[in-house]
Length: 447
Ligand SMILES: Nc1ncnc2c1ncn2[C@@H]1O[C@H](COP(=O)(O)OP(=O)(O)OP(=O)(O)O)[C@@H](O)[C@H]1O
Ligand SMILES: [Mg+2]
Image (cartoon, helix red, strand yellow):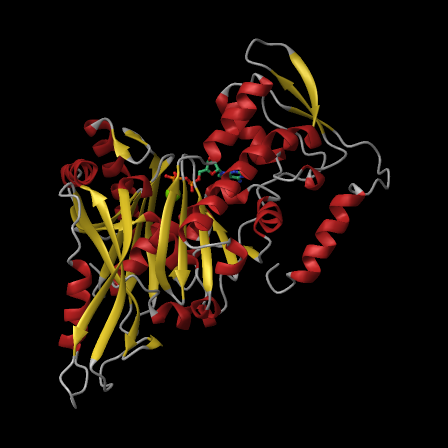
């Protein structure tokens, strides 16, 4: 048994269930010492639809992580899908006695007053996240304790989850043999794992492109200020390919991961795939054409994110200074470039960072929410723990190799790659190249 505190995240996604075990050193740094991932079962769009199957999958995921770490898991922080959560920002006020310093009790009173909003009885508050404070009209105060003033105001972002789905989740986790330490909004967890120190001073949009959902969070000076969930993700891209190319889902997924690109101009111009449809007929398709099928779905997702933020906060370009893309589906080649084009903001790929230990296993974008749950568990205040930035200053583990294959690689099973013809000095389409050059110049710090 380890002596340091152990914090465990259980990320229940639409495609996978992942347990991440973190060990917190006395200086606050976190080592990931166990990980267990299994295919998601008994779940549909973040809800339990089959108690037994979901329990079984959760148990398996926890047991794998336990075996890897040699630690027995007692309790876990569990992710909650955004489609079962409702978030509001509420204003709280506390009067301060004349000539007295603001105390923690005054701050708590202001927050408590903000919490006193009528909420649907079917909702359970998950997070109460104070934004910045205002003292006698002076805005932008992070910590008002010790200041003088007569009027303390605070905006509090309240995230509540729907009771029914939470009860079902709790039951499955408990039946799998572990206790629920807390529920955490997936979008918050993904942000905590990926936001960098410099981004704490700005407004950044974190987009977790998952399998069945896209979770969006807006962090304003390090605080979660808005969140949303779009019920479309990487599985829909796969479904489009499967339907249009008449491929079995598994094969469409394989083709997407290996040869797909979110921007046709970034697809290998020399690559032609020979694909065998579900009915057995074969036909050829270029990687360029493949990407032309992929692009509209991702563009639709980014369009929906834009609309959501436009409605809630205002035009994206004015509201935020950057976008962080994470989640498994952000691994598709060209996704970052497409996002840059759609948001007209600097965009980078976000991976979990600021951790040690099994970084080779959990450093992919699909692990952001799982690692974020562990980081949430350290402070439980919805902020990136400062220890993460200490760890970040150290050299990080090498990032995994790019998922797409190289030119001419022999493909598996039914999708056959025609080897690239002898080098034709054929450059990528001119328009795409110039667009990329332009983007590289504008966002060179983000590439
Ligand atoms: N190398 C890759 N290239 C392209 N897409 C990928 C790659 N790896 C994973 N994906 C896609 O990522 C998606 C799964 O992402 P992720 O593991 O983040 O989902 P999840 O957490 O289970 O789902 P959600 O967050 O929506 O509940 C799948 O649609 C899969 O096709
Ligand atoms: Mg996820």
